[in-house]
Length: 124
Image (cartoon, rainbow, N blue to C red):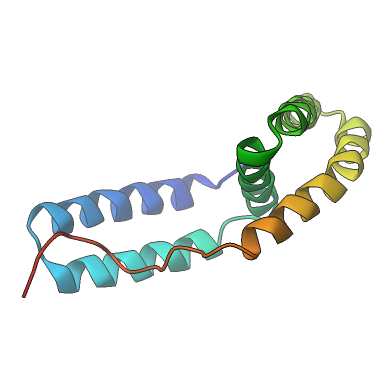
């Protein structure tokens, strides 16, 4: 689903970011964090859809675990249908799942979102 070159680029960025954190190089952390964010924004739309589903399920799990389990099961069936080449079934499951995903994504937006700052534990 994610092109090989993009997988390699993300892996390299992850390693470079880890090295920057281990060496406490703040400017390198900022640079590699921004590069990673840019690369993540360039992922295929299908990956963003799957990320949204996972986030929505996590949001639901804290408040409505039974609904989260149903969403998770439907999401799993959707992934299996997609992987098996059953696009009609995957589409049908997505249309069933979409209202719940939208609801829980909206719930998540109403909460305080974490900032994109890096917490290093270093003090000036």
